[in-house]
Structures are given as structure tokens and as C-alpha cells.
View: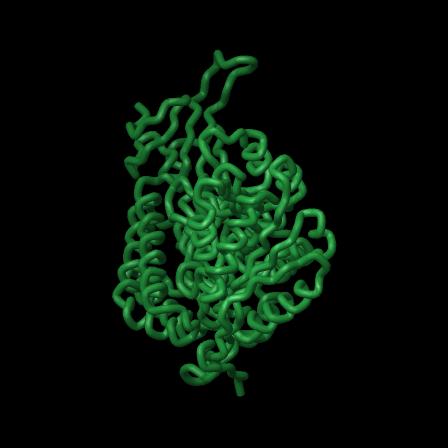
Length: 508
């Protein structure tokens, strides 16, 4: 008999839905093998077919919007408005990928025609395009039950690339995962494609992670979550007989720097905005401002006093599961004992997996008293660091890689060197704003230096597709043996770069 587990409502601690069957090794292996068998058929789909599939998936998910929001609310205790918006974010990003592949933009076709006069030596006919990597293992995130889950950005970009996907559902919202999975498979089969290109596995057994990472048919991994699991996946992937890439987004402190001049103008306004960002979603965003650097002067003191006053009345929703709540409470308790640390606390949520918002204030000179002050803590907390403005640059340089960083300054502030230092650490810089919101656009980058990410790639935006393809060059091939996107007639009618010139015309 299969093992089962049950979802839990974080607001009440009570079970949600019926028992969920946990997949065993044989079932997970069979799902991967089935995906492997259909990879060539999926890779061979045309831009029009691929785009139609993605749009059908988006339509199928959107048709379940109310039901998805309801079950997700029960499993995560996230507000209905939040999860409804997340359904639409999921749908919108899938449709954005559909538009990309419809134009052939995912293929990046480049053609250098043969040139006997090319220097320093004659050039053969060279034609390059992108090829799907193969079967991809995706791990759903806990904090975004839709946008970074079963059909979230990792899965959507892999499917857009032409890769079959095997998704590990997150046990904190298994019923939401199952509902999304059914919507995706419905769209796949209606498009006349094999349902095996998209498979869901469920379970709380940690060995499932090992099975998905070590299966020889799997050629890449997409992950959004903790550094602990991300680093495990990297280790497992490198220990394989044939190592594979792991695209892991593992969290960040996302430091925010406030100059003395900007706080002198609006410290109270910025204190409130900073807390709203830090406590958004109960502090369970990987883009939460986990570090705030303020000057150790009167303006900085006023900012801290405003934070203390504002946070005292703040109460946040419960954390996503018992494990997250326990780790948060333990971390807060440990840091509270450090020398030189002051606590600013909010209102306790006594229900379910509720916790107390807690902000730490510490001088930069005392940060060394507790290593955890410069570690990400998932939940409603942040660290305010007091330091002289002339030390901001050294603080920035001492930090590890970040997904994002923000700077609040006036137009007259000399922060050029600070900005330059932050570009060496973070994948996204924000001027006079906060890093919490991440727009899903072509120009977006959601990734940073280690340990925020395992690679220099992004997990949000259209460029995330290129994690799951690789370039292949065809040299001196006859036209009828080339992939369609590289043939002279350009049967897809897509834009190509021919001898350095962009064109959607055929080659005569």
C-alpha cells in the first residue's frame, strides 16, 4: 500500500483535503523514463505548435482560476487576492513564452554563408540554432504555490524550450499542485501531444529529490528554494557519471542602502515603506529586504524610531508550514542573544503557524558577534545596520551574492562607487524603491552571484528559457538535411541573422 500524507492549513494547523499518495522509486523512475521516450517528438514541434500548446496551457489554468485560488488559500493561508493574482501571473508568463517561441526567438538562428575570401582563412557554411536539453526536473517552491510551482516560471520556460518536465510538487500545497497538473495535461492532450511531456510526482520522502537529480535520463534541474536543498542538488548533479546543470535560485538578503541625505528628507515615509516590504507575504519572499543599512546619525536614529513605532502594530499572516515557523522562531531566539543587538517587535499571531514580526538593530562593528545576522531568515524579520556613510562601500563589498539590492539616495548623492560595487554582487539594482516586486518581462533578471544563484542565469523573464537549450552548429550541410529554421527557404518565416544582418527573408 502506498504511503500518504496530507496538506495542512497554516492558519489553523488542521488538515486540508484527503490523503495524497506518495510516489515511490519505481513510479518516479517510470515517469522520468516516459518523459525521455517522448523528448524527440516534443523537441520536433514547430514554433506555431509550441506556441499553441503554451497558450492552451495558459487558458486551461485560467479557466480554473477561482478553484485554484480557493484551494491554494486553504493550503497556504495566503490571501485570496494574492493567490488570485498569482494565478494570473502564472498565466501571463506562459503566454509571454508563447509569443517568444511563435516568433522563433527561442531558436536564435544565425547563418554565416560560405565565403572563400573570408580572412584569415576561407569560411565554410555555418548555421547555428538552439536545441532542447532534454528531460528537466523541476522543484516547486513553497512560497509561490502557483508562479514558482508546478506550472511556474521554471516549468514554463522548460516547456517553451521544448523539454519534457518532471515536477516535484511541494508538500505544503499538494492539492494546488495536482489541480494545476491536471489543467496542464488537459491542454497537452487536447493539442494532440503525449501527456508524458509533463509529469507530477508527490511526496514528503527526501529521497525523491535524490531520484530526480540522479536519474540518467534527466539533463537539467530547475529549483527555487532554500540554499540547503539547492546545494544538495548541485552536489548530486556533480556526482553523477554525467554531470548536469542545476539552475538554482536559493534566496538572498537583498540589502537596501539609505543615504543620510535621503533620510534627512523623508525618514518616516521610508521607514514605513521599508517595513511594508520586509513584512509583505509574512516576509516569505526571496526578494525581501533582509538587510537595511542606515547612517549612524540623527537621520538614521529617526528612521529606526519610526520603524519601532510602525512595527509595534504590525501583525502578519502565519508562515507556510510548521518547519518554516520552527526555523524562524529558533533563528530569532538565537540572534536575540547576540551582543549589541536591539529588538523591535510587532504583534504576535497566535494562530496556526503564526509568529512575531521582529526587526534587529545593530552597529556594523557588532555584526561580527553573530554570523546569522548576515544570513537569510525566511519570515517577518530584517536587520537594520547602523554605519557611517563612508563605510557603505566596504559593507557592500563584504557581502556575498544577492538576487537584488536597492539604494535610496538623492540626485546629489555621490554613490557611483557604491552602485558599481553592488553590480558585482546583485543581479538587479533598484533606485529609490524596494526589491520585493519582480516584474515578469523580457528585460527582467532574477538571479545573482553565489550563493543567491548557482549560475549567472535568470529564473524570471524570457531569458530563463535559454537555461534549457544549447547551441548546435551545422557546418557545410545540404539544405534538405538542416533543421527547418536554418533552411534557405525559411519555412517558419522567422527572423534570422544572415551574415550579420537580421532578416526574415529566404536565402536565394
